[in-house]
Image 1: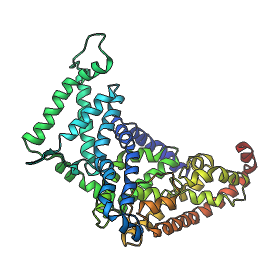
Image 2 (image 1 turned 180 degrees about the horizontal axis):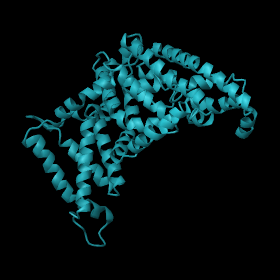
Image 3 (image 1 turned 120 degrees about the vertical axis):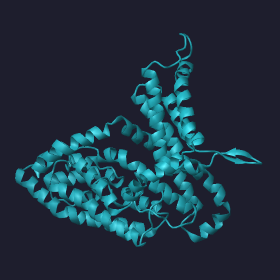
Image 4 (image 1 turned 45 degrees about the horizontal axis):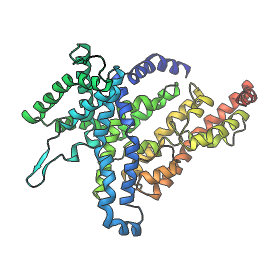
Length: 422
């Protein structure tokens, strides 16, 4: 097992670390994460519009359109918000003006949509290309805009204002020439040539989105995330940089279906992982924490008291680094197998319709049963599935935890570690 960790340290970790620090992926990760408060609040309005209780749903039905307005102006504009934020973070990474980067990115993204003309009301920009389904277009436009800004800055193709001009004014004029390149370029491609950027990018990334909703597409990120955590790397941050745009597209499709009263199409948006796989955190470690409450090893019993509350709130760094799971051959296998096993079970349970597919993004620090109930639109069966998954994870951890207890006892470390913890 130690040889296996050495191989991970030699081949996987350097590549994944380099990937996580890649400038553009980091900007995409930070930009999308900044939209999460809007997504969460907007999602709650979807629950209010379609409550899980029939009597309440009937009473609210006349007001559904009004209730959905905040939802449509948050979730419905998700890609627009993300594009601005990605542009801001990418520009800052180049030590450029973040505000200019965000504004230019957003302008480029908006220009990829053609307004519709109504004879009696003028022009209107439809929201269909501004939500999560257009996330890949938003990412591409943000990168394009900031790279043009960077090119102009490094080649000194900017308008420099005299000393004494307010800094905000000077920076806005520095973005003038890049804007004069970005806006006509996108306009020529989209309007003059008539090239539908959204359709092209959607077709280009469609295989990736479809693959992300398969069992293999679920298991691959789970395995990579747990391998990284087992060696001390924040797996969610690394993999999320690549996978989160796909998860958001799947989530957006589910939300659109729910708002239209249609069947939920996708199993694997991010709430699938959050509430049914990462129960207690990566590795489904809440099962391990619950077992440690009854451990005969004083150190592990003490650790259970320290890690129980964070584990309930899906924070498991104390478990990974404190027990530890990281670089621990005895706990690595259940740390990997538990999320894989419960992911397979959950996938098939949702595929056959025993539990609703998730379509609501709720705060990740909620206890898993509550989060699963809300994420599935109020399906009580989701709570049952979460408890079943916790039991499965605990059963997989149990023999390995016992072996770890015996190891601590043999080495005479249990008491010493407990004293260190105090």
